Length: 184
Picture 1 (tube, rainbow, N blue to C red):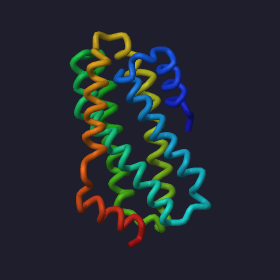
Picture 2: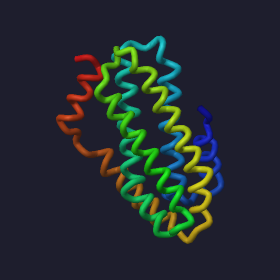
Picture 3: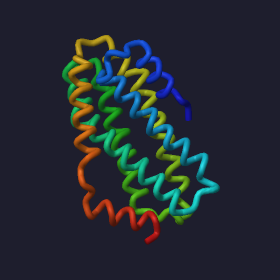
Picture 4: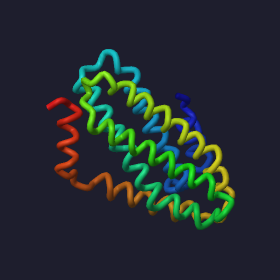
């Protein structure tokens, strides 16, 4: 997987350090963090215990789910309003990719980490995520950067939603999924 998101995120922060809540900078930083977690999983996959692999995968799934929810609820509707028909195909494709990723996340959350299919499922999810992020950044973000979208205002909304999701108490379902993945 390329480190495309990290490079673009660094350039974006260096180019405009006064825009910490620019929506695109925030999303690129999320992309970089998630891709970094996939790289970490791949590096540690052969030497990590089943418990460690399960924990890493659950962290990836949690962060990816939060990211997808925020995009679906806040970012994509705003992009749709600004781009109209010009962005329709890109946004439909992005939503379909989210559905594929959500299915893989749900599969991972039901799969014990000791299962022989666990590592390949994480890898396939990583490939889908990397491709989705690359397409989003190179096509959708490029169109939005040159649109009339209020990137600072949207960034504030995204940051607020991230904080809301990040501080929410986990449900019993989350604990049950964790026990199943970790083999308990």
